[in-house]
Length: 314
Image (tube, one colour):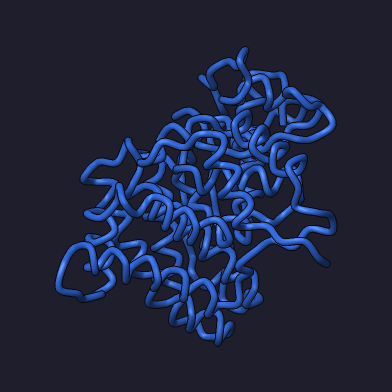
């Protein structure tokens, strides 16, 4: 981009493509490599300059078209240089100047891709609602996004060529991206990033397996936000507690119904060595989402959450 004298960077594709465009745009102005600006890097520098980015998403998942965050896999860093870290760079400078959201670009996407992207958007929205940094605006955006995904993800998965569900899902992903840009994400995404870095689990699938156990873990601290999300999804019950419980089960059932995995199968024993490696990776790569979780998460609790999402076997 520098040698060619680029004036703008266009990201046409899924979230990884748009994140790459953000990284290219920032490095074209600031030099270096993404790790130099990563939030997980103790010596990381702020991203203060960037070429303008035009984001054109072809999936309904990350909401990267409206966020000021880009996630990269960094190799040869951290306490274990042999294992990569998935960590973000962020700052207003890399928020796309223009987002062109055309729902038709996702029409015909394979069912598994649609489902996993929907799980990521759903995670963004739910996590923004319960984050310690949640605010009324982010929560309104997130509630609408959750309702749209609950209502339209199954038909999009079951009928890939039907354009009908694609517009509400595209809107949901963008709303969820705007919500988590304000409020952040929680330990669900810390677990997902570690699963991606250590075990190479695709991000949407990693978010899908982590979401139900984290919802249950956070339930005692999240009765009110879960009940509000339940109401947005038209889930009825006699009390806030009952609405919250039904919401958790609705989300777990949704993820199962669209064919997403409930656990990650690993071709090795799920032993202390593996779990400790995942806990350390999560702590190093995504410390902020862990601190934003509505319930405090110590290493033993994080290890137990990892055990809940893993099973041995091919």
